[in-house]
Image (cartoon, rainbow, N blue to C red; front, top):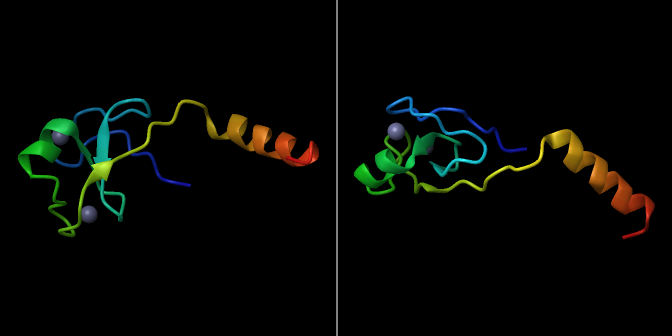
Length: 74
Ligand SMILES: [Zn+2]
Ligand SMILES: [Zn+2]
């Protein structure tokens, strides 16, 4: 499971689960304005910064519905 960091590593802005945030493959996390300022290149690993998917449900709900799906043979 992706670690959902709650703040930008550069300016400490909040990057909550439903906020727009950008991550590299090492899960360095940055807010939108820092990402734009850095031209979407991670300053830690020089990797590409991509938009992080938002997380609406909490992990337990998701696991529960995955299990339910299996029980119903889907
Ligand atoms: Zn920032
Ligand atoms: Zn990185």
